[in-house]
Image (cartoon, rainbow, N blue to C red; front, side, top):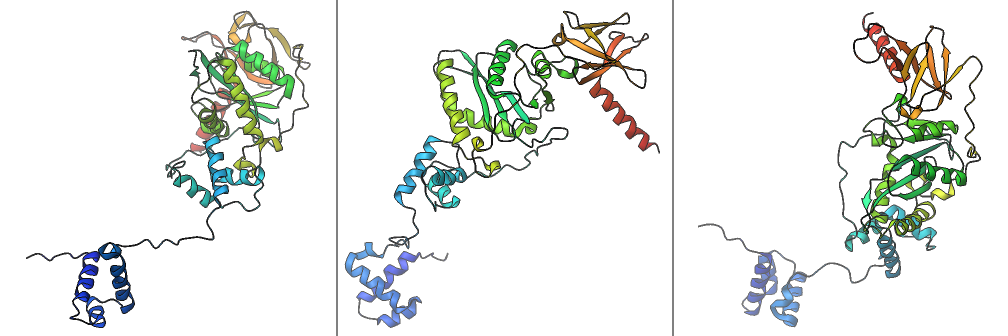
Length: 409
């Protein structure tokens, strides 16, 4: 015969029923059921007042808590969270101090519990194996306008069926969002016009960092496009992140995630309405949203406009003495010593410089950027006999030969 499982409520009910028979003393029953007399009298008192219903388990939660967050403060937290769906406890705590003047706001864990209690936050476990940023060769900014990061947010369709490509420009040092422009496409002319307007207002940076996408890069020499060559003509250095390496521009991609969540869902009716929405969101991002990398300060507190001004007249590049200056053709080819070298369509009608180095090789420059060296192979079977060895490939080959030499020592 199997053992019978007895629940806690069945034991309490049996204790009370036996006590009602007056055949046992309370002390004997308490000893038999292994409870204190205080607990026994408590159950008998509750049975006398409410019957069997009074024997049900009761909550031990206190009726009041002196440490409970004030209802007005909780309402402020919920209002800010509904207004900014991507802001977590750290940012909300800072907003309660700055915007609402609370000297001692609730701690971050309390704010997080309030959000979870109202269904506005779900605890997420950080996925393992996250990629670390690999910025080898990329400049770490030390002041405002040292490095600008530029990218196109993924396109989406507006309410009228038109395509929208948000162009975003951010100062890497201060995290200040300089531009969030709703563009109908990613073509060169419209993007150039946007940069001309931006640089007239905020000046020029020292470096612009972009990925290898259109219209910032191409498959031509040095991966330069018409837009990136225009930046170089303005005296701006261009940095390319690695292929399929968004982590090298992580802060910009993180900003894009907030942009998508707060300013594109649902999309606006047309480009003009979407642009107004972008401007409102950009003001909030720069002046109200605390940034963790800035010690929960706002980007507007760190950013200063650049003193470098735009070259409105597109003055030609001046090369130093000893450099032979030549003009590329309409198709982006360069004629030199009876040979024709293909540079890329982006170099059409561009002035490039040629200089002999110590090894007797002819180096090819655009402004102060070394593009590569001119080469000619009469016995080459595939591809043109006259070609340009890219500077990046020459450096890679040099490193490879050094590694090979070390292995054979």
